[in-house]
Length: 78
Image (cartoon, rainbow, N blue to C red; front, side, top):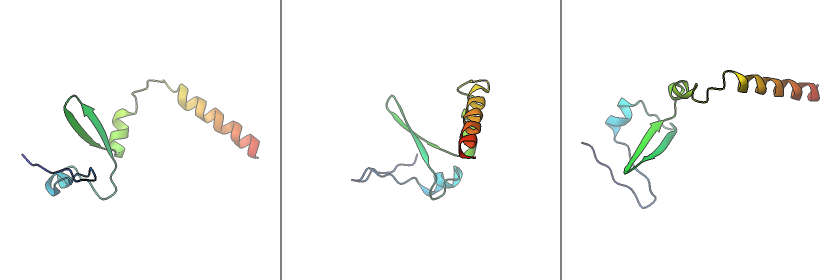
């Protein structure tokens, strides 16, 4: 088990071996989740977005609405 300490600024150092295993690089954004008495850090990566892509289940309605809105904007600009 690896441990770390919270600084006075609330910062935590993720141990090097964990960063390597999780492929965490400088600038990687992390999602912070609270689960009962746990704090979970999840890297926000392209694979994360791929996993959550179908969560809303809009069946293309949202994409269609966004494309229509963009078309209206282009007409106004052009």
